[in-house]
Length: 300
Image (cartoon, rainbow, N blue to C red; front, side):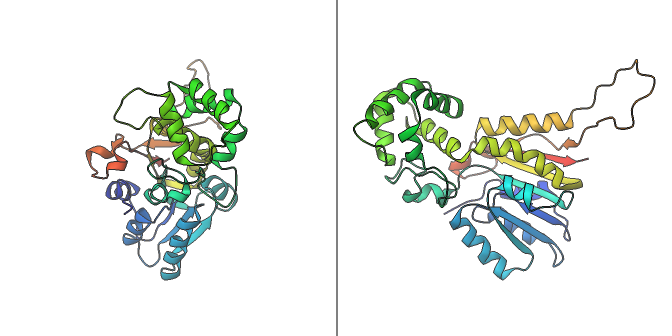
């Protein structure tokens, strides 16, 4: 069963106005969306985005039952840049990462817990699968992906093992890849040795960090003055991007005191950081979400 992370905290941080207009940019299975709708009046509106076909089915069912909901299909970067209007929202919510239903479905290939095809695409109707990437990427590219997105210490050895193995046996199943990584990484830890490699491939195949980095400025532009940006991240690479973005947007402009007159178009801070980062393990009993961190900013 899917549990939305930081459900109460995220909704409270949005400071939902009954007649406001809100965007859930990562709909998932709609937990946050339902909570936002509970706080909206009949005049309020909620737009939701997702690119996962299963998530979109749930979203369209919700929209069919509630006229306040509008569904956008696609990745959030493309939808925000091409279909939504700047300055129209009172709040934007991001809940990054993979959802529990995606992990639990073996055929989606996100997890090594069950054997399934090496897919890992958020939208499994288009794009390169994990298996296709593993079949064509050279050793150095794989090494960089495993290290950069998974911080995998055995990145080079695992990449070389993949190159050697695929000459005779294509890697097409999650179980195959997990077993291969375990052959290379024999260091005992609480985590499965394949965890970092699977994370890295998923991030790469879906361009997750690139999407986040390009979409945060778009989300800020979508907000009205006083509108809230609420972002939930699930690992340090995501949170690092969010933290850096918010700090940059909240940073006061340095002024050269020797200037006799300041220019009229002097850039100023565009965001006010609200409170401290909230860590899910302190307030949430969802085991899969213990690494989650929520950050909140308000449009100036």
